[in-house]
Length: 369
Image 1 (cartoon, one colour):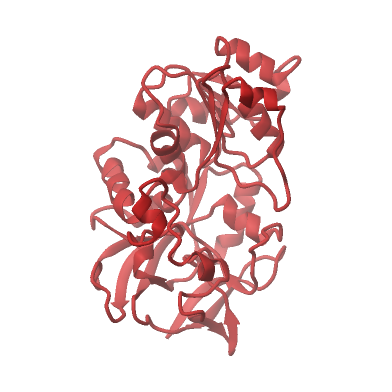
Image 2 (cartoon, rainbow, N blue to C red; image 1 turned 90 degrees about the horizontal axis):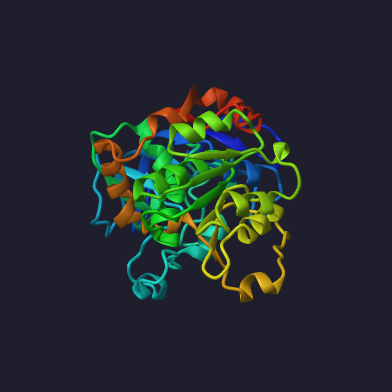
């Protein structure tokens, strides 16, 4: 079949709208019509050429929502007509990682996913006879895409695609980092570094669990109002701090935060986030993805005296189990999404969506097909 897609022919070049050939689903796979997809910093990171796993030509996009059109042999958990959210972190419920209940990082298809192909080692996309790679197992910048059954979460049918697509990455990553990874308790003092599409969801996750002090840190003064909109109690612009930022934050939080979250991907900020934690028990959660080859550093004293560094992927969420619940939270008003969808654009304007993100003018842009 044919599908319209925004194709990344190579790094550092604008996406091009083309018509691709798409093979139908094989055993254990589903064909999904993507109705809406968010534009995430991770997509931009790969397009920048700094992603060590970046492959070209490829169909980027990993934050989508759509409808199952066709299923391959052996698929039982979804059927044509079901509404689904693609999962870049699948949930097979059978691998060692899934069975351990200690992590959400399913390993069932990790190897082939990282190579831009389906579990059988082949791509379903092609352009003029040339192989086009899948991206993060999702490729939601295509109107139609094929995914493994274990990489789709079935969700309720009354939820709007142009809002719940955000749950495919940003919402779940931010809220989940609070609930699943840090397990923040009511009354905690917290700091969030970076108030973009992920950081704001960390803030609303902290509000949801009843955190006391919620400090937002960002160089963009416009983010103050956004943070306050979702529950931030204090705002710090590092450019306006006289002296050391960490010392300022430690004083502000009465000895350091119980929990800090880095949503910037900047390794310098990651160190600041750790060192702004409270001595003896503070935990710092790394959410942002740093450039390939970058390393984090701190003095061992910081860890010896009780601070903890943790990482989180997809907010520690188990996709097929947790994503439908988060959609329910949105539909019941427990969490907000609508205000964060600042721009809705057609596929033809997808490059404008990237520009809006780079210029700090959007929280989340969504492309609708």
